[in-house]
Amino acid sequence: MKNFAFIFARGGSKGLPRKNIKLLAGKPLLQYSVDTALATPLIEHVFVSTDDSEIAEVAIAAGAIVIDRPAELASDTSPEWLSWRHAIEWVRTSYGEFDGFVSLPATSPLRSVGDVEGAISKLNTTEADVCISVTPASRSPFFNMVKLAESGMVELVNKPHAEVSRRQDAPSVFDITTVVYATTPNFVLNHYGIFSGKVTSIEVPKERAVDIDDIYDFKLAEAIIEGH
Image: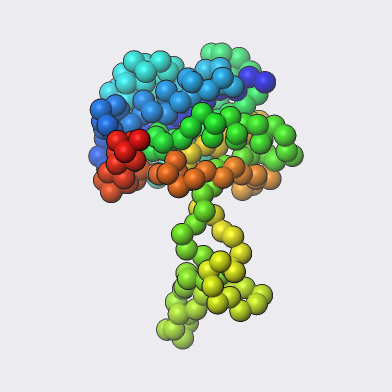
């Protein structure tokens, strides 16, 4: 199986400006994902798709191959799925066919090699089209998540079949993380969206599932890294 890793890193970021190359514990955020991909035995090549010259320089210095992303695929509103398709077509033209498409977002710097290999292995040993990473949710739509009803009162997002008086008795629910997405080039090119196919998952502990969107996430990741 020929697996290639892809990291999609735009220059623009509203939540935390220039976050993809912001220094996290002395190293550009993007480099964490590149380093993990390069250290994963099941990964053959590592590509960074970007519209930004500074990000491209960091990617090359870290050992990745840069894909120039068109500006129309790098706006706040452009679906990342289209960037996935662009990257796959570019790689097929430049490097030939490959079997496994593995997306490793730069916003998850704390993933392990085991997380990446676990997702690839799970995809290859099930009938799923996609393997995503999840982590236990801190709140449950069956217990302590509510929505506004038409009456103006609040009610549970989902009502369980039986009364749930303790969170532990509610069905297990998980947050999707950006640690790893594993699928195939053909699935991405012939479908639109992860849940347009059969989806399996691997579970990642919270300390490796930090997804950096703002400065508070960034500080949390920094504290975890420096605390090790």
